[in-house]
Figure 1 (spheres, one colour):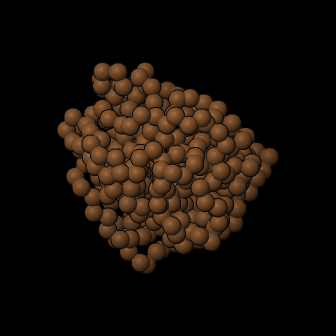
Figure 2 (figure 1 turned 90 degrees about the vertical axis):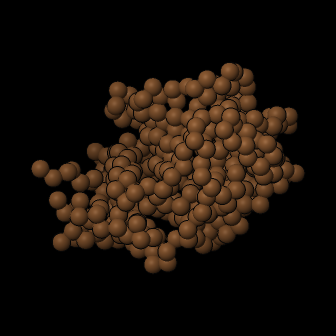
Figure 3 (figure 1 turned 135 degrees about the vertical axis):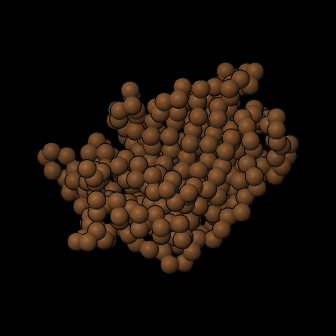
Length: 345
């Protein structure tokens, strides 16, 4: 018996996927997507991203003290203009390189004592892209694991502007209970319900800049700000490895506490995310790798099914157009062919 086809795919006779730019159709029974994926090909190969070998195990990371500035309004670091995103789905900022097919794993340790915690985050850059607020974003699939079980599966949408700034334009964080979907009440999409995109990693960081907008979604009470703490910190260490030239960004909210400090290393990306209190935890990089074709296919498939559920459960998500396939390199093109074969079954 063949596998169930996610409802969003449109397949022509013979199994060929085609493009359809129409928006999801709202009915009194829910939302039906006109197309969740299109096999649009990028003929120019994605540039290779050489990165050093990742650290081999978990470690507590030494970070600078938290910012002392009082939280306040955080205007955008730069004006959001869709015309400034020429190759927006190619996330190649040297401090957070996330080419399609990349997986990073973050392991949690306790800030007090450095003991391993049963908490792990796995982030995968898929071969999928999605247009949000006029900008093509890379679809990231993020899973949060606790005690060996997934507690959240999220679609995260990021894009890079022409100045190298990495923006976040939305998130669909689906909760998981007893291995079953349990809704996504914290969903937000830039341009919907007054939500605004913000910058995750600045392209040209400057510690003299005031706090800037990280993300805002008034409908769910979300307001996140960012502030550059260090642009080139040295001796940011784990037991097995130390990093130099580290960008440290503090993320905080005037509405919530405590802040989180994130450390980014050129050529590697995020290596630590620490809550700024002794009772919290530090998520640190424990693995970074390129996925095989089969693994990329599996990740893309899961992301598409997650989007199908998003259209059924979230009125905010229902305002978006479906994801598309972006065959930006040879492996991605192989994934596209395998995906087409799977749809014909």
